[in-house]
Image 1: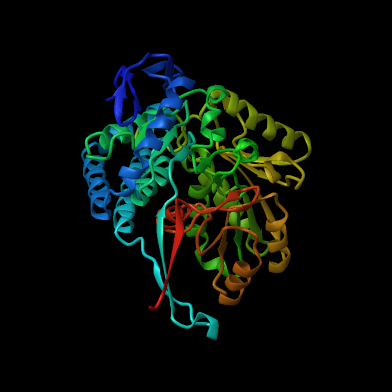
Image 2: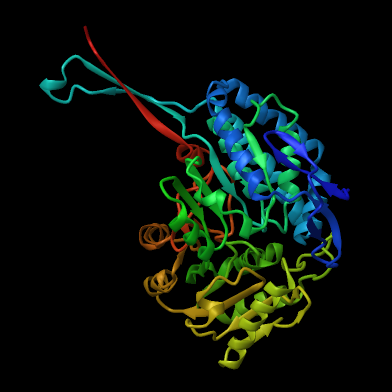
Length: 477
Protein backbone atom coordinates (compact mmCIF):
# COMPACT_ATOMS: atom_id res chain seq x y z
CA UNK A 1 0.00 0.00 0.00
CA UNK A 2 3.09 2.23 -0.04
CA UNK A 3 4.25 3.11 -3.54
CA UNK A 4 7.91 3.08 -4.48
CA UNK A 5 7.95 6.70 -5.71
CA UNK A 6 5.86 9.78 -4.96
CA UNK A 7 5.82 13.18 -6.70
CA UNK A 8 5.61 16.64 -5.28
CA UNK A 9 2.83 18.99 -6.38
CA UNK A 10 3.69 22.21 -8.20
CA UNK A 11 0.82 24.50 -9.23
CA UNK A 12 -1.76 21.71 -8.87
CA UNK A 13 0.25 19.19 -10.89
CA UNK A 14 2.14 16.08 -9.82
CA UNK A 15 5.81 16.37 -10.76
CA UNK A 16 8.18 13.40 -10.61
CA UNK A 17 11.24 15.61 -10.68
CA UNK A 18 13.62 13.26 -8.86
CA UNK A 19 13.77 10.60 -6.17
CA UNK A 20 16.06 12.49 -3.81
CA UNK A 21 14.02 12.24 -0.58
CA UNK A 22 14.13 8.88 1.18
CA UNK A 23 11.15 7.98 3.37
CA UNK A 24 12.06 5.39 5.98
CA UNK A 25 9.92 2.84 7.76
CA UNK A 26 10.33 4.20 11.29
CA UNK A 27 10.08 0.74 12.85
CA UNK A 28 12.54 -1.13 10.63
CA UNK A 29 14.72 1.81 9.64
CA UNK A 30 14.62 0.66 6.01
CA UNK A 31 13.81 2.92 3.06
CA UNK A 32 10.10 2.42 2.33
CA UNK A 33 9.64 4.92 -0.52
CA UNK A 34 11.31 7.75 -2.37
CA UNK A 35 9.87 11.15 -3.14
CA UNK A 36 10.57 14.13 -5.33
CA UNK A 37 12.30 16.87 -3.38
CA UNK A 38 11.89 20.54 -4.23
CA UNK A 39 14.74 23.03 -4.62
CA UNK A 40 14.68 26.81 -4.20
CA UNK A 41 13.84 27.34 -7.88
CA UNK A 42 10.78 25.11 -7.57
CA UNK A 43 9.64 26.83 -4.37
CA UNK A 44 9.97 30.22 -6.09
CA UNK A 45 7.88 28.96 -9.02
CA UNK A 46 5.21 27.68 -6.62
CA UNK A 47 5.00 31.04 -4.85
CA UNK A 48 4.66 32.88 -8.15
CA UNK A 49 1.92 30.45 -9.24
CA UNK A 50 0.06 31.14 -5.98
CA UNK A 51 0.36 34.89 -6.55
CA UNK A 52 -0.96 34.57 -10.09
CA UNK A 53 -3.90 32.44 -8.95
CA UNK A 54 -5.09 34.59 -6.06
CA UNK A 55 -7.62 36.66 -8.00
CA UNK A 56 -9.13 33.61 -9.71
CA UNK A 57 -9.36 31.82 -6.38
CA UNK A 58 -10.94 34.84 -4.69
CA UNK A 59 -13.62 34.68 -7.39
CA UNK A 60 -14.12 30.94 -6.76
CA UNK A 61 -17.52 30.97 -5.10
CA UNK A 62 -18.22 29.59 -1.61
CA UNK A 63 -20.32 26.74 -3.00
CA UNK A 64 -17.43 25.81 -5.31
CA UNK A 65 -14.97 25.75 -2.40
CA UNK A 66 -17.44 23.62 -0.48
CA UNK A 67 -17.67 21.20 -3.41
CA UNK A 68 -13.87 20.80 -3.42
CA UNK A 69 -13.83 20.07 0.31
CA UNK A 70 -16.76 17.64 -0.01
CA UNK A 71 -14.89 15.80 -2.77
CA UNK A 72 -11.91 15.46 -0.44
CA UNK A 73 -14.09 14.00 2.31
CA UNK A 74 -15.46 11.39 -0.09
CA UNK A 75 -12.06 10.42 -1.46
CA UNK A 76 -10.41 10.27 1.96
CA UNK A 77 -13.08 7.80 3.05
CA UNK A 78 -12.35 5.72 -0.04
CA UNK A 79 -8.58 5.81 0.62
CA UNK A 80 -8.93 5.40 4.39
CA UNK A 81 -6.83 2.24 4.90
CA UNK A 82 -4.18 3.37 2.41
CA UNK A 83 -3.69 6.61 4.32
CA UNK A 84 -3.65 4.86 7.70
CA UNK A 85 -1.04 2.36 6.53
CA UNK A 86 1.12 5.15 5.10
CA UNK A 87 1.01 6.89 8.49
CA UNK A 88 1.94 3.66 10.21
CA UNK A 89 5.03 3.29 8.01
CA UNK A 90 6.30 6.85 7.60
CA UNK A 91 5.58 8.01 11.18
CA UNK A 92 5.84 4.72 13.10
CA UNK A 93 2.34 5.44 14.39
CA UNK A 94 0.48 2.42 15.82
CA UNK A 95 -2.18 1.43 13.33
CA UNK A 96 -5.09 2.22 15.69
CA UNK A 97 -3.74 5.74 16.20
CA UNK A 98 -3.19 6.04 12.45
CA UNK A 99 -6.82 5.18 11.74
CA UNK A 100 -7.86 7.72 14.36
CA UNK A 101 -5.85 10.40 12.58
CA UNK A 102 -7.46 9.62 9.22
CA UNK A 103 -10.85 9.99 10.91
CA UNK A 104 -9.81 13.39 12.22
CA UNK A 105 -8.56 14.40 8.76
CA UNK A 106 -12.05 13.68 7.45
CA UNK A 107 -13.62 15.61 10.33
CA UNK A 108 -11.41 18.63 9.61
CA UNK A 109 -12.30 18.77 5.91
CA UNK A 110 -15.98 18.24 6.78
CA UNK A 111 -15.92 21.19 9.19
CA UNK A 112 -14.12 23.30 6.56
CA UNK A 113 -16.80 22.42 4.02
CA UNK A 114 -19.46 23.70 6.39
CA UNK A 115 -17.50 26.87 7.21
CA UNK A 116 -16.80 27.69 3.55
CA UNK A 117 -20.38 28.86 3.04
CA UNK A 118 -20.72 30.84 6.25
CA UNK A 119 -17.82 33.27 6.16
CA UNK A 120 -20.03 36.20 7.00
CA UNK A 121 -19.74 39.90 7.82
CA UNK A 122 -21.92 42.50 9.53
CA UNK A 123 -24.08 45.51 9.01
CA UNK A 124 -22.79 48.19 11.41
CA UNK A 125 -24.59 51.09 13.00
CA UNK A 126 -22.19 53.99 12.50
CA UNK A 127 -24.53 56.65 13.83
CA UNK A 128 -22.87 56.82 17.23
CA UNK A 129 -22.92 60.61 17.26
CA UNK A 130 -24.47 63.49 15.28
CA UNK A 131 -21.51 63.75 12.91
CA UNK A 132 -22.18 60.20 11.65
CA UNK A 133 -25.83 60.83 10.82
CA UNK A 134 -26.75 59.26 7.49
CA UNK A 135 -23.72 56.92 7.32
CA UNK A 136 -24.11 53.15 7.08
CA UNK A 137 -21.40 50.58 7.65
CA UNK A 138 -20.82 47.07 6.34
CA UNK A 139 -17.86 44.71 6.57
CA UNK A 140 -16.94 41.37 5.04
CA UNK A 141 -14.01 38.98 5.12
CA UNK A 142 -11.75 38.64 2.07
CA UNK A 143 -8.85 36.22 1.49
CA UNK A 144 -5.54 37.45 2.87
CA UNK A 145 -3.64 36.11 -0.16
CA UNK A 146 -0.97 33.45 -0.69
CA UNK A 147 -0.17 31.45 2.44
CA UNK A 148 2.96 29.60 3.49
CA UNK A 149 2.08 26.43 5.40
CA UNK A 150 4.63 24.34 7.32
CA UNK A 151 3.38 21.15 8.99
CA UNK A 152 5.10 18.80 11.49
CA UNK A 153 5.96 15.10 11.52
CA UNK A 154 3.76 13.89 14.38
CA UNK A 155 0.31 14.36 12.77
CA UNK A 156 1.26 14.40 9.07
CA UNK A 157 -2.35 14.22 7.89
CA UNK A 158 -4.46 16.14 10.35
CA UNK A 159 -2.10 19.01 11.10
CA UNK A 160 -1.62 19.47 7.36
CA UNK A 161 -5.42 19.42 7.08
CA UNK A 162 -5.72 22.16 9.70
CA UNK A 163 -3.82 24.43 7.32
CA UNK A 164 -4.97 23.23 3.88
CA UNK A 165 -8.72 22.94 4.55
CA UNK A 166 -9.15 26.46 6.02
CA UNK A 167 -7.05 27.92 3.19
CA UNK A 168 -9.39 26.37 0.62
CA UNK A 169 -12.48 27.48 2.55
CA UNK A 170 -11.12 31.04 2.77
CA UNK A 171 -10.01 31.22 -0.87
CA UNK A 172 -6.27 31.51 -0.17
CA UNK A 173 -3.72 29.92 -2.52
CA UNK A 174 -1.01 28.10 -0.59
CA UNK A 175 2.37 26.47 -0.76
CA UNK A 176 2.89 23.74 1.85
CA UNK A 177 6.11 22.29 3.19
CA UNK A 178 5.28 18.96 4.87
CA UNK A 179 7.81 17.49 7.30
CA UNK A 180 10.53 15.81 5.27
CA UNK A 181 10.39 12.71 7.50
CA UNK A 182 6.63 12.19 6.99
CA UNK A 183 5.51 13.76 3.68
CA UNK A 184 3.42 10.97 2.14
CA UNK A 185 0.15 11.95 3.81
CA UNK A 186 0.32 15.52 2.53
CA UNK A 187 1.10 14.27 -0.98
CA UNK A 188 -1.97 12.02 -0.89
CA UNK A 189 -4.02 15.10 0.05
CA UNK A 190 -2.45 16.77 -3.00
CA UNK A 191 -3.46 13.84 -5.21
CA UNK A 192 -7.06 14.29 -4.12
CA UNK A 193 -6.99 18.07 -4.59
CA UNK A 194 -5.61 17.57 -8.09
CA UNK A 195 -8.83 15.77 -9.00
CA UNK A 196 -10.87 18.95 -8.41
CA UNK A 197 -11.42 22.11 -10.44
CA UNK A 198 -9.38 24.38 -8.19
CA UNK A 199 -7.92 27.27 -10.24
CA UNK A 200 -4.48 26.61 -11.72
CA UNK A 201 -1.69 27.47 -9.29
CA UNK A 202 -3.92 27.37 -6.20
CA UNK A 203 -1.81 24.80 -4.37
CA UNK A 204 1.68 23.37 -4.25
CA UNK A 205 2.93 20.75 -1.79
CA UNK A 206 6.71 20.62 -1.77
CA UNK A 207 8.79 18.38 0.50
CA UNK A 208 12.22 19.88 0.99
CA UNK A 209 14.96 20.00 3.55
CA UNK A 210 14.86 22.77 6.14
CA UNK A 211 18.10 24.36 4.91
CA UNK A 212 16.56 24.90 1.48
CA UNK A 213 13.23 26.24 2.66
CA UNK A 214 13.98 29.86 3.59
CA UNK A 215 11.54 31.18 0.99
CA UNK A 216 8.66 29.68 2.99
CA UNK A 217 9.56 32.18 5.73
CA UNK A 218 11.17 35.19 4.13
CA UNK A 219 9.41 35.66 0.80
CA UNK A 220 7.26 38.79 0.95
CA UNK A 221 4.82 37.46 -1.63
CA UNK A 222 3.35 35.34 1.15
CA UNK A 223 0.81 37.20 3.29
CA UNK A 224 0.65 34.62 6.07
CA UNK A 225 2.98 32.00 7.56
CA UNK A 226 1.33 29.17 9.50
CA UNK A 227 3.86 26.94 11.26
CA UNK A 228 3.40 23.96 13.55
CA UNK A 229 6.52 22.54 15.15
CA UNK A 230 9.13 23.13 17.82
CA UNK A 231 9.34 26.42 19.78
CA UNK A 232 12.97 27.07 18.87
CA UNK A 233 12.25 26.83 15.15
CA UNK A 234 8.91 28.62 15.33
CA UNK A 235 10.14 31.73 17.12
CA UNK A 236 13.14 31.93 14.78
CA UNK A 237 10.80 31.82 11.78
CA UNK A 238 8.67 34.59 13.27
CA UNK A 239 11.75 36.76 13.72
CA UNK A 240 12.59 36.34 10.02
CA UNK A 241 9.08 36.47 8.57
CA UNK A 242 9.01 40.18 7.81
CA UNK A 243 5.65 41.90 7.33
CA UNK A 244 3.47 38.81 6.92
CA UNK A 245 1.05 37.62 9.57
CA UNK A 246 2.44 34.67 11.57
CA UNK A 247 0.50 31.88 13.30
CA UNK A 248 2.49 29.48 15.47
CA UNK A 249 1.35 26.24 17.10
CA UNK A 250 4.34 25.12 19.11
CA UNK A 251 5.21 22.89 22.03
CA UNK A 252 3.66 22.01 25.35
CA UNK A 253 4.33 20.60 28.79
CA UNK A 254 0.77 19.60 29.59
CA UNK A 255 -0.32 19.06 33.17
CA UNK A 256 -3.20 16.98 34.52
CA UNK A 257 -4.67 17.37 38.03
CA UNK A 258 -6.65 14.75 39.95
CA UNK A 259 -8.66 16.43 42.71
CA UNK A 260 -9.48 14.91 46.11
CA UNK A 261 -13.12 14.29 45.17
CA UNK A 262 -12.23 11.76 42.44
CA UNK A 263 -11.73 8.63 44.56
CA UNK A 264 -14.83 6.96 43.07
CA UNK A 265 -13.47 6.94 39.50
CA UNK A 266 -9.76 6.13 39.79
CA UNK A 267 -9.89 3.27 37.28
CA UNK A 268 -11.37 5.55 34.62
CA UNK A 269 -8.90 8.32 35.44
CA UNK A 270 -5.96 5.93 35.26
CA UNK A 271 -7.14 4.71 31.86
CA UNK A 272 -7.49 8.25 30.54
CA UNK A 273 -4.14 9.44 31.91
CA UNK A 274 -2.30 6.47 30.41
CA UNK A 275 -3.95 7.16 27.08
CA UNK A 276 -3.20 10.89 27.29
CA UNK A 277 0.44 10.39 28.23
CA UNK A 278 1.41 7.55 25.91
CA UNK A 279 -0.85 7.51 22.85
CA UNK A 280 1.18 7.66 19.64
CA UNK A 281 4.26 7.12 21.79
CA UNK A 282 3.79 10.46 23.55
CA UNK A 283 4.66 12.43 20.42
CA UNK A 284 1.94 15.04 20.81
CA UNK A 285 2.28 18.60 22.07
CA UNK A 286 -0.71 18.05 24.40
CA UNK A 287 0.52 14.69 25.67
CA UNK A 288 0.11 14.40 29.46
CA UNK A 289 3.57 15.05 30.89
CA UNK A 290 3.00 16.34 34.43
CA UNK A 291 0.50 14.46 36.63
CA UNK A 292 -0.52 16.02 39.96
CA UNK A 293 -2.56 13.76 42.26
CA UNK A 294 -4.16 14.83 45.53
CA UNK A 295 -2.24 13.31 48.42
CA UNK A 296 -5.31 11.42 49.68
CA UNK A 297 -5.49 9.49 46.38
CA UNK A 298 -1.82 9.41 45.49
CA UNK A 299 -0.82 5.88 46.53
CA UNK A 300 -3.93 4.25 45.06
CA UNK A 301 -3.74 6.03 41.69
CA UNK A 302 0.04 5.67 41.53
CA UNK A 303 -0.33 1.88 41.76
CA UNK A 304 -2.99 1.81 39.04
CA UNK A 305 -0.87 3.94 36.72
CA UNK A 306 2.23 1.79 37.20
CA UNK A 307 0.20 -1.37 36.50
CA UNK A 308 -1.31 0.02 33.32
CA UNK A 309 1.84 1.63 31.94
CA UNK A 310 3.82 -1.56 32.55
CA UNK A 311 1.23 -3.53 30.58
CA UNK A 312 1.34 -1.38 27.44
CA UNK A 313 2.28 -3.37 24.33
CA UNK A 314 5.41 -2.09 22.59
CA UNK A 315 6.57 -3.05 19.12
CA UNK A 316 5.63 -3.19 15.46
CA UNK A 317 3.10 -0.41 14.78
CA UNK A 318 1.44 -2.55 12.08
CA UNK A 319 0.10 -4.93 14.73
CA UNK A 320 -3.39 -4.22 16.02
CA UNK A 321 -2.48 -4.62 19.70
CA UNK A 322 0.58 -2.33 19.64
CA UNK A 323 0.16 0.80 21.74
CA UNK A 324 3.75 2.11 21.82
CA UNK A 325 5.64 2.26 18.54
CA UNK A 326 9.01 3.81 17.71
CA UNK A 327 9.76 7.47 18.17
CA UNK A 328 10.31 9.40 14.97
CA UNK A 329 14.06 8.68 15.01
CA UNK A 330 16.71 6.99 17.10
CA UNK A 331 18.22 10.42 17.77
CA UNK A 332 15.00 11.62 19.40
CA UNK A 333 14.80 8.42 21.46
CA UNK A 334 18.39 8.92 22.62
CA UNK A 335 17.64 12.53 23.55
CA UNK A 336 14.67 11.61 25.74
CA UNK A 337 16.38 8.57 27.22
CA UNK A 338 19.19 10.91 28.28
CA UNK A 339 16.64 13.06 30.12
CA UNK A 340 15.35 9.96 31.93
CA UNK A 341 18.85 8.95 32.94
CA UNK A 342 19.63 12.43 34.25
CA UNK A 343 16.42 12.31 36.29
CA UNK A 344 17.48 8.94 37.69
CA UNK A 345 20.92 10.29 38.57
CA UNK A 346 19.35 13.24 40.37
CA UNK A 347 17.38 10.96 42.70
CA UNK A 348 14.12 10.52 40.83
CA UNK A 349 12.50 7.08 40.87
CA UNK A 350 11.76 5.31 37.60
CA UNK A 351 8.53 3.51 38.51
CA UNK A 352 8.34 1.65 35.20
CA UNK A 353 10.09 1.76 31.84
CA UNK A 354 13.22 3.81 31.30
CA UNK A 355 15.00 1.54 28.81
CA UNK A 356 15.66 2.09 25.11
CA UNK A 357 16.37 -0.08 22.09
CA UNK A 358 17.03 1.88 18.92
CA UNK A 359 14.12 4.26 18.34
CA UNK A 360 11.94 2.32 20.81
CA UNK A 361 11.73 3.92 24.26
CA UNK A 362 9.75 2.02 26.88
CA UNK A 363 6.77 3.89 28.31
CA UNK A 364 8.25 5.56 31.38
CA UNK A 365 6.67 6.90 34.58
CA UNK A 366 8.85 8.92 36.95
CA UNK A 367 8.36 9.97 40.57
CA UNK A 368 10.22 12.58 42.65
CA UNK A 369 11.53 14.46 39.61
CA UNK A 370 12.60 17.96 40.57
CA UNK A 371 10.91 20.85 38.75
CA UNK A 372 14.24 21.92 37.28
CA UNK A 373 14.77 18.61 35.43
CA UNK A 374 14.14 18.40 31.68
CA UNK A 375 11.48 15.71 32.15
CA UNK A 376 9.55 18.17 34.32
CA UNK A 377 10.04 21.57 32.74
CA UNK A 378 10.75 20.94 29.05
CA UNK A 379 8.68 19.24 26.37
CA UNK A 380 9.40 15.50 26.46
CA UNK A 381 7.62 14.73 23.16
CA UNK A 382 7.85 11.03 23.84
CA UNK A 383 6.50 8.30 26.15
CA UNK A 384 7.58 9.85 29.47
CA UNK A 385 5.49 11.36 32.27
CA UNK A 386 6.16 12.46 35.84
CA UNK A 387 3.84 12.20 38.86
CA UNK A 388 3.72 14.11 42.13
CA UNK A 389 1.28 14.60 45.01
CA UNK A 390 -0.32 17.89 46.04
CA UNK A 391 -2.35 19.09 49.03
CA UNK A 392 -3.79 22.47 48.03
CA UNK A 393 -5.72 23.09 44.79
CA UNK A 394 -4.69 26.74 44.51
CA UNK A 395 -1.06 25.78 44.98
CA UNK A 396 -1.17 23.15 42.24
CA UNK A 397 -2.61 25.68 39.80
CA UNK A 398 0.48 27.76 40.49
CA UNK A 399 2.67 24.74 39.76
CA UNK A 400 0.96 24.27 36.42
CA UNK A 401 1.58 27.93 35.56
CA UNK A 402 5.25 27.61 36.55
CA UNK A 403 6.13 26.66 32.99
CA UNK A 404 7.36 28.42 29.90
CA UNK A 405 4.57 26.60 28.01
CA UNK A 406 0.82 27.16 28.04
CA UNK A 407 -1.08 24.92 25.64
CA UNK A 408 -3.74 22.87 27.48
CA UNK A 409 -4.38 21.50 30.96
CA UNK A 410 -6.69 18.78 32.26
CA UNK A 411 -8.53 18.83 35.60
CA UNK A 412 -10.40 15.88 37.07
CA UNK A 413 -12.78 17.43 39.61
CA UNK A 414 -16.46 17.39 40.52
CA UNK A 415 -16.31 20.93 41.89
CA UNK A 416 -17.74 23.56 39.56
CA UNK A 417 -16.05 26.33 41.56
CA UNK A 418 -12.65 24.65 41.15
CA UNK A 419 -13.31 24.08 37.44
CA UNK A 420 -14.13 27.76 36.95
CA UNK A 421 -11.16 28.80 39.07
CA UNK A 422 -8.85 26.72 36.87
CA UNK A 423 -10.36 28.33 33.75
CA UNK A 424 -9.80 31.78 35.27
CA UNK A 425 -6.28 31.22 36.57
CA UNK A 426 -4.43 28.80 34.31
CA UNK A 427 -2.21 30.45 31.70
CA UNK A 428 -3.05 28.08 28.87
CA UNK A 429 -4.99 28.10 25.63
CA UNK A 430 -7.52 25.53 26.84
CA UNK A 431 -8.70 23.86 30.06
CA UNK A 432 -10.35 20.43 29.86
CA UNK A 433 -12.50 19.48 32.86
CA UNK A 434 -13.14 15.79 33.50
CA UNK A 435 -10.56 14.54 31.03
CA UNK A 436 -6.92 14.77 29.99
CA UNK A 437 -5.40 17.81 28.22
CA UNK A 438 -4.75 15.56 25.23
CA UNK A 439 -8.45 15.68 24.29
CA UNK A 440 -9.21 17.65 21.15
CA UNK A 441 -11.86 17.87 18.45
CA UNK A 442 -11.19 19.68 15.24
CA UNK A 443 -13.67 22.56 15.36
CA UNK A 444 -12.58 23.96 18.72
CA UNK A 445 -10.16 26.89 19.07
CA UNK A 446 -6.81 25.22 19.68
CA UNK A 447 -3.51 26.87 20.46
CA UNK A 448 -1.43 28.24 23.28
CA UNK A 449 0.21 31.14 25.04
CA UNK A 450 3.76 31.84 26.19
CA UNK A 451 6.21 29.55 24.36
CA UNK A 452 3.33 27.44 23.05
CA UNK A 453 2.59 29.85 20.23
CA UNK A 454 0.40 32.54 18.70
CA UNK A 455 -3.08 32.30 17.21
CA UNK A 456 -5.54 29.42 17.09
CA UNK A 457 -6.21 26.43 14.91
CA UNK A 458 -9.68 24.93 14.57
CA UNK A 459 -11.10 25.62 11.14
CA UNK A 460 -13.21 28.71 11.87
CA UNK A 461 -10.37 30.36 13.78
CA UNK A 462 -7.80 29.58 11.09
CA UNK A 463 -10.15 31.11 8.51
CA UNK A 464 -10.20 34.29 10.58
CA UNK A 465 -6.40 34.42 10.37
CA UNK A 466 -6.50 33.72 6.64
CA UNK A 467 -8.90 36.57 5.89
CA UNK A 468 -8.89 40.33 6.28
CA UNK A 469 -11.84 42.53 7.23
CA UNK A 470 -12.83 44.94 4.47
CA UNK A 471 -15.08 47.83 5.45
CA UNK A 472 -17.68 49.62 3.31
CA UNK A 473 -19.12 52.99 4.38
CA UNK A 474 -22.10 54.43 2.52
CA UNK A 475 -23.42 57.95 3.04
CA UNK A 476 -27.11 58.45 2.38
CA UNK A 477 -27.71 60.80 -0.56
